Figure 1 (cartoon, rainbow, N blue to C red):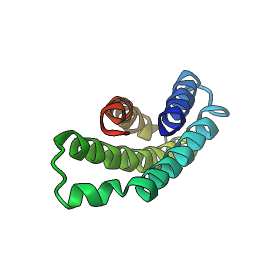
Figure 2: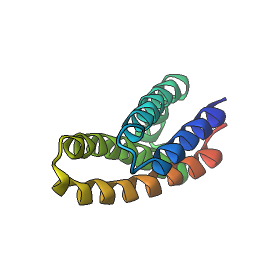
Figure 3: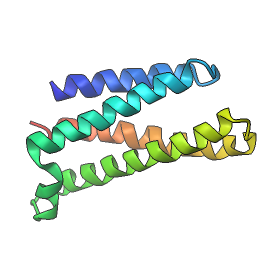
Figure 4: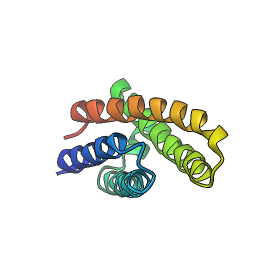
Amino acid sequence: MLFAASSVIVLILAIGLYFRHNRKLHPPIMMLAFILDILLVLVIELQRQAVEQVVEGLDSTLLTFHVIVSVTVVLLYIALLFTGIKVLKGQNQMMSAHRMLAYAFIIGRLTNYITSFFVGS
């Protein structure tokens, strides 16, 4: 079930990326993905106590890596939200920062997605 939810979120992100030049569609699509991703993180934490497992020293380097990437992705979402709002308000000098954060985000979110198949049950 969690894999299906994550797959849907990755699909929504791909749709948002496709519409990246459309200022009417891109922001709400990406916000939907952000909200769903945060909800997914909360569900995973409530079901599996993933962060606690890592903090307690679980002997899984891959799980630790996955959690670090997951937290980084959430931080990148916040940075993208901040820069995206600035761009929408006409501060076009933020576009390059938004774009660079987006590249890092895409790599991070895909890494998160792939590693989730190896650390999930």
